[in-house]
Length: 596
Image: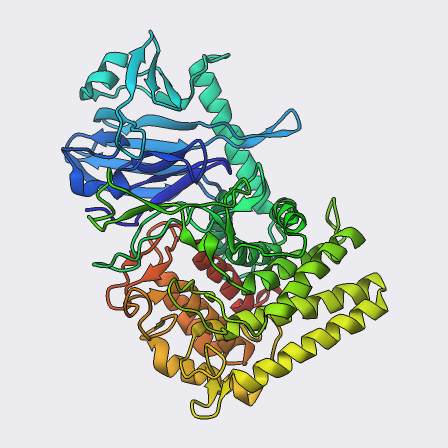
């Protein structure tokens, strides 16, 4: 049965998920939102009829396995041990390193097989599929390679393994290291073993150098580093887009049809990723993302901005259901595309301005923001002010109902507030005063219409009655002092109603698909940060440690979590959740000075 105990490899062009038995169960090519060439993760229900595609290096008589990353890298190792004690080590990675002053990130992953103990008997099964698992490839072979020809993509396996064994999936004794290089249909320009060795060495060096420049906290360093590397892997470097997750249609809970495609760039999620990595000093990703964001702002020209775009700025992400895949644990439907691109989500204007703000102040950037970008962002701010008290789908993307959501209004306030700060920094005193006036007006509306005297808390919608975990972000965006009695009451009321054990739900009321059944991981982290803001750090640390204990064996999280079993659900790996790990650690860790 499938689960989310999966390793992630990638190079900021594409990615792959590897299970604990060294099977690649998910990989979309040629980019994150492409055709899932390996998609058995979403088709385990049809095993034997249409396995959905996978790349397996299996060990005969498997008894146990161990999986880990080479320290401070995105290079994954899976060790498989058979009943007699023989051990096979599989090292998986996607090449990424500087070459000729440019980043080399080919559409390729490499699998290195090493018999570290005894004489393991292995079987290689390479079964790519196309058209979302519906089409078998045409297979041709050469003396040292196999070609898998699909309708729009051809892959070549270069290997020093016996081709006949690969094609026939014949078990054989592994008596020497072997290389499996799957990538573009191009002949090698240098010897296979030498190429794979150099690519692995250079990729390890790249990741360790990147990690070495992170400003990490004293405590929970391994958790922060793993979260940071994985967030980096969610960057589509060619354009600067950051995807919300690497999968589609992993349900939010068992037995539900809450299945969504998250392989796109939500401007909200991307803002949180950028801010978390900025806290670690990884401004390179912010610079990439700002290039992407600037294109959106200029194209909108003061008009509507979608909450989500494709990784290459695609506007239409038409949602459809794929019948050729059974779904994760038979949870249909499998969805491609996301209807959210059609939504009105007014918080997006705040997230656009918030993501851009640091670029006006940070002296490390190669391309700091200038007066031109400020003028473009002012158009975004005007839109935010116009819409701050208008109904929308909200942060949780309700599909059939709209309200004036407090979280959306708060982000509209943030757009006006940051524009005032930017204008002051640029010396535009009149514009600073103008935007301060706008921000104060929005703030007054929120304080009046979002506060419920009956509930003794801020509520999810103007004149509403329900609580919403997104309002725990109020001090994070500096809307309110964390010790303001109204915010303290909101935090306590939200915990009383939405906290299940150590896990926080988004809300409890039924939505378009019924009542939520699992906790939403980022909401738990928001609660942890709210407690820390209020000075309740002991409580926050206890909850943070509990969340870390609920990560999978590689330190990763998905979107949702069953509060009773701690099983991970929802798309994976979820950038929101990884952001929570970084922010929590940075907020709660003892300082280096306190310890050293």
